[in-house]
Amino acid sequence: MPRILGVDIPNERPTYIALTYIYGIGNAKAMEICFKLGIQPQTKARDLTDDETSRITNLLDKEYEVEGLLRRKVQQDIQRLREIQSYRGYRHRRSLPVRGQRTRTNARTRKGVKKTVAGKKGVKEMRH
Image (cartoon, rainbow, N blue to C red; front, top):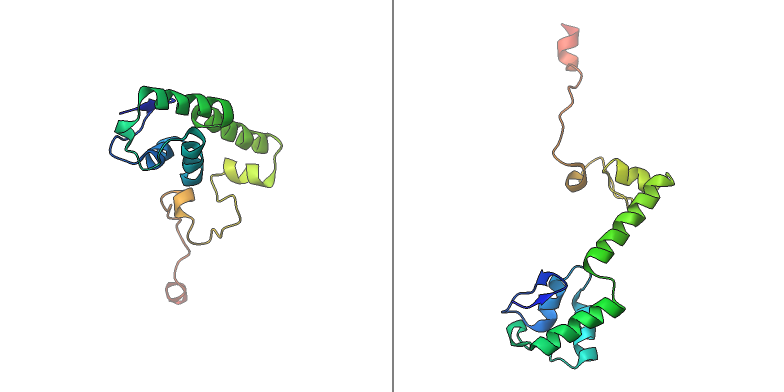
């Protein structure tokens, strides 16, 4: 398994797919990297030479924000929103959807498991 920027990329995948295992690199950037370095995108990751692997690592270090640096930047951006007490920061702090989605229903991924709240007694029981 080739190791790039502390990430083991899978042997059996083509190079351009294997590069997407690195945080911050999607399909388009992976193809761009392959063409910049003159590496065949369809070459299996296990067939990459040590030279090609080191060239990929150097390119990622110089030109792209990936892995730890990108994760840290995203966290700092969220922290800044919280500190300036923006609406988006408030939504992050409360673990609610940030981008305007409805929360009356369908926000379970963000809100977590449903917490049941005791409701009012039924109308029929109150009459008798």
